[in-house]
Image 1 (cartoon, rainbow, N blue to C red):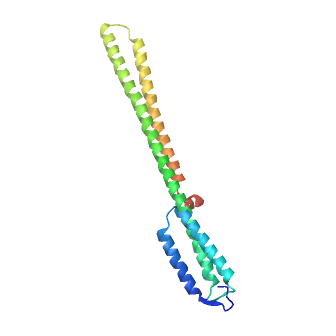
Image 2 (cartoon, one colour):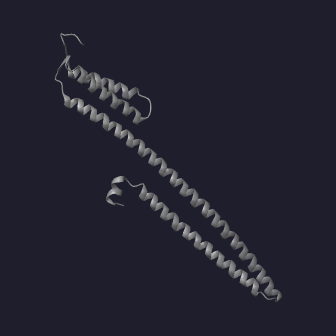
Image 3 (cartoon, one colour):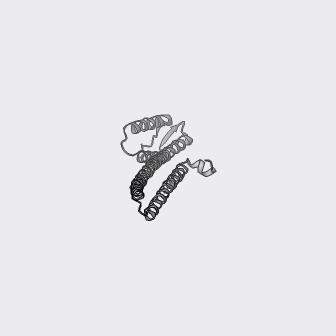
Length: 191
């Protein structure tokens, strides 16, 4: 290439060869999509540098700086698309993890509160039977009735806690839904 007589090469020939290289690279490249895009971008930058370096030696027919610039812009866009796709996958995985944690927390709390509620109902039944037995025997049942009322009040508190938990879970689910909205909806405040 460094001979004095200069070589005549069609830019279309160079561009076609680059297109073939790009196609082969994309079909055979192995690895993360953002790394593949980064390597392709570096290839286009090196290609432009080489064309600039040998521009004086080569007589390029139909040479177009715009085509080189377009190829570089395409490579940059592909790199950005790959980066955004990786980010989207990460956020999707994170959202699924958060949803699973929320479901696990909900299941655990419901089970705990339901178990406590069942135990309180059992206690209430036992106390009611004792009260009935004492009334039949004619004994004073004021203390047992107080225990029964206390047990009933405790049961109402647990039911209230269950409702509060349901409300908290609904609020967390709404927060999670809002956090996973597309960026443009967050930017413009669209629900």
